[in-house]
Image 1 (cartoon, rainbow, N blue to C red):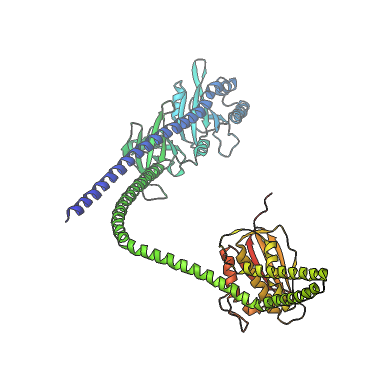
Image 2 (image 1 turned 135 degrees about the vertical axis):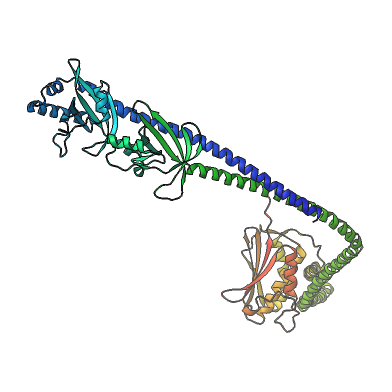
Length: 601
């Protein structure tokens, strides 16, 4: 086993042990906090329940003492066989019962025989029954307030009995009893997570919010205790069973954790109990609360802590991995940088040579492009040569004729006529000079620099240059909708060349068609200036529209297919473009698009 692997195993084991310790500590703290909180809640609920029981008992506790002072009861006890007195007391006790809300109210003589009762009209009245065996009667005959809980031997209903002696002439001649119904207490405190039980001194449950526990004992009953319970007939003939409680942990003298097997589950459930005595009533009151919530809270706390610890662990591992990757990247970066520096030093020479070669090649391409443009210009001049020759020959012939006539007029001393001929010769030479200057201006090379150009001036110059060609072919070149304020960024010489090329192409497309016409229009669309060159020729074949700007594509037998291609590239170099389309009425339209220049205010 390697040392590094051993260190990893030790680290994992140490971390696992630390996690287990933290989980155990958090579980212990959470469990103890849950016990304390549950104990506090139980204490509050138990005090409320006992307070409710006390209020119920206090409501009836003093009634027997008050009723015992009534003269009707004394008169009946002194004359028990007087039926009219019996009826009066029965009605009186019935009214008392309805007013107080007691379960039963009845009068017994000194022997325990019931002389009158509030239920004298019921199916099973107490009248005539002897309850001298009841502890509450015995205690009342001793001159004290008798208190007792038991099942009624006649009604079979649970009740709490208050009995008070009736004294006449310093002698106890009878006992008045009020029976209180406790069933409403169970209804009010049911439907809660916690259960309440009230047991007698023998541990027998006689009030409970859990119906299955009624008449069960919370502790073991020996035979002597069972005989005592049976002799008092407190619970009639009910077989009292022991509730399956098992103490698991004592929390305090009055609180503990027990296990109880319920009817709906054979698995014992952990329950926290808290008990308190009611000495006056002789009861023991207990609250039982399932510890399921504590277990769930403790489990939730452990799970949350584990998730937090795992999150922290994963965050730490992620940070450690990032740190390791960053170190690896830095190391790789240093190595790559060294290799790159070496490669750069090796390639610097070659790159320098390649750059110089590229610059040289680029210069050659630019020069070639310029020469190609110049060649295209010369090609246009060649096409215009016949028209130019015709334009120059006619004035030359006229000059010679005017010169000969002037000589004759001088000989004849007609100096005025001679002067007119000489004036005409001067006009013709000026016209020939103008033609020559336009051709010279067109033939010169462009500077290549973009400047602000007046579109109207460029169009007029191009029309003047192609005028001989248009006259010779009887084609009319006109302008429409020319805006004198339009300006664009362009190289004026190259723009003139493109425009002349488009006009010549339009005239070539018209050919021998009679009434041939080329129309030049302008418009502005947002930041673009558009120059349209339209003709009334046959138009462009739809299959050729996408190819006419390709180098060496032509439909003319004598054409080279470079004019439109060069024109498109010239416009690209001026940040413009060239497009073509057919007109709905026939003919073609080629459009020059250039970046507009706003007129300065």
